[in-house]
Image (cartoon, rainbow, N blue to C red; front, side, top):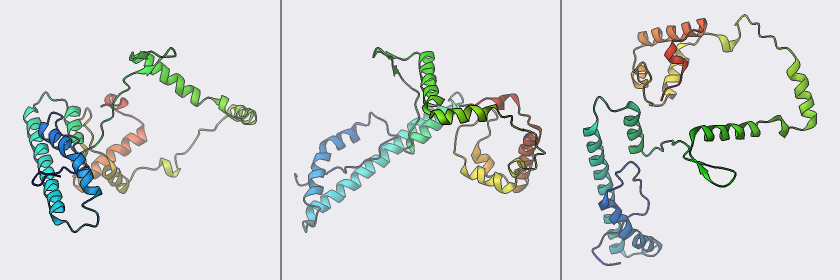
Amino acid sequence: MTPGKPAAIIQWNCRGLRPNDEEIKCFVADWSPLVMCLQETFLRDTDNLSFKGNYLNARAKARRIIKSSKRESWKQYISKLNSNTPVKKAWDMVRKSSGKQISSSVLHVSKPDGSKCTETAYVANLLADEFESNSSSNHYSQAFQKFLYTAEKQKVNFTSDNSEDYNSLFNITELRIALERSNDTATGPDEVHYQFLKHLPDNSLLVLLDIFNGIWKNGCLTGSHHHSHR
């Protein structure tokens, strides 16, 4: 290794950075092979402090570059936000900058003849057929299929006085636990974020609890809550 030149660390956490950050690209490409050699030789039970010092200095420099690039990337993104920016797009960027994976839709599936298809309806039908096949009763033994056929013919009594534990009203402890476990997702049609609900005072939480219990008892939801939202 040439004295005076920095070596790059091997493990990086660059998710969320701009892909066109040439400084980081060049830094990794030029020095990663040398660092691998350095770690395998000079940093294992060695008294050669000069090599170890160069390695630690290079690692510190790499961390500074990554931190600075993240900061600049975030500033540039924030400057582009306005009232027309979709909420989902903003939260996707927050997740990416935190190193979290963003789920993506199915791009294509293979047809029986080996060709690729991206048509949404075809992909949906193919997946539905696959799920139906996997959950088919044909996978069961003949004895179990006969038992299942008989059991499914028996009438089930659905009458209840709703006194079961799972039909009881929600309490404030359950509400607090649910809010604590909720993720920071984009808001729905009501534009109310979970972070707002998590910081409500006790009296407001009790009002919210009454609303949820009212919905639970009456079984009535607003029209917009009959559908999922992204």
